[in-house]
Amino acid sequence: MKSITVNLEYHKYDILIENNLVDNIGVLIKKYTNTKKCLIVTDSNVYSLYAQKLKSIIDKEDITTFICIIQAGEENKNIDNILKIYEELAKSEIGRADIIVALGGGVIGDMAGFVASTWMRGIRFVQIPTTLLSCVDSSVGGKTGINTSFGKNLVGTFYQPSLVLIDSNMLKSLNDREFFAGMSEIVKHALLFDKEMFEFIEENYTRSNIEKNIDNLLYLNCKIKASIVEIDEKEKYERMMLNFGHTIGHSIETSAGYGSYLHGEALAMGIIFAIEYGIKLGITKNISILERTKKILNNLNLTTDIPKELNLKESIKQDKKKSNKNINFIFIEDICMPKIIEVDIDNIL
Ligand SMILES: NC(=O)c1ccc[n+]([C@@H]2O[C@H](COP(=O)([O-])OP(=O)(O)OC[C@H]3O[C@@H](n4cnc5c(N)ncnc54)[C@H](O)[C@@H]3O)[C@@H](O)[C@H]2O)c1
Image 1 (cartoon, rainbow, N blue to C red):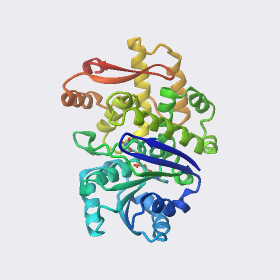
Image 2 (cartoon, rainbow, N blue to C red; image 1 turned 180 degrees about the vertical axis):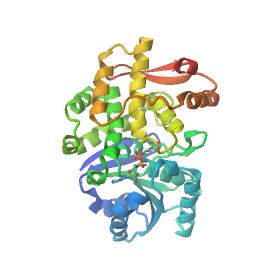
Image 3 (cartoon, rainbow, N blue to C red; image 1 turned 45 degrees about the horizontal axis):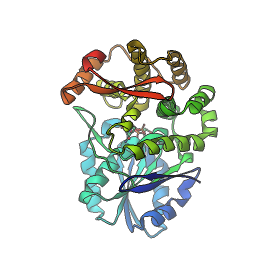
Image 4 (cartoon, protein in one colour; image 1 turned 30 degrees about the vertical axis):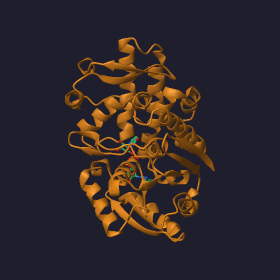
């Protein structure tokens, strides 16, 4: 089993990665939390695949387990479903000593984390990410949140999990679209911090090759995320680098309507925008990375051209209204050379 400890000033937790970890999850939850009761929050797709099995594995450890099912999809990451989870917590009488288990992708992780941070002013939660994206990114670092009609992830908290359990075997049931969308966060990490990983994906872009190396890739990406979060938990500076590609990615998601593009699909377009923009401004010095990154993303079945019909200007202008000042845009001068530069939103427009 691979393990990483995330060492924060006031909190410390482990990320455990293993193929077929699921069978040990009950024992691990007992060992790490010593809880007697838990609520598994999951979505409608993951429920039919894994939730019942997980419930019986946790039950075996004398932990009374309840399940709350949310309809799958980004469009359901909203306040109505937060209320639904609170209702289930109340019905199951989940108290201060009990835990929430987030079983699913980033949508479930972000919502369950938000609920955990606010229920009784904060109870513990365990992340069991089941998409590639949530394994390498959203389950680590403690950002929680929901979407509103005013923008993506506008309501949220910083709230770290007590434990992250990653079973790479669960990723086998992802369809290709979801699987490759998750790869865009890996490409992002590689561009920012790991040249060797970038070159590895350049050569190994088929699903079967990626799967052969999956535990190592999960480990390397969680390690990258964990080390940035350790330096800057609340995104005062360094953690902003992880937003590479996200300014435009989020605008694409918002203007197309939540759920039209997967987060990772929008991110792939945002990454290419950020490189092109960097070249235009003379910040990105190694211009060959544009074609190399486009090729990688296209090989991973990800589109890199922003659809013309999307009105990104409107959603970016919303950002301008919110911040009323310049925004920190993440560029790369070259692979492993990220740069945070304040830009005027009008310049992006
Ligand atoms: N908190 C953070 O730091 C952070 C970072 C990146 C992204 N995010 C958020 O994560 C969300 C995107 O996450 P996502 O891509 O995991 O989306 P998701 O949670 O919607 O999952 C994608 C789809 O895959 C299905 N699914 C999940 N696991 C499966 C499995 N093992 N087999 C088959 N199907 C499965 C889900 O039901 C869903 O339909 C966005 O809301 C984004 O804002 C958060």
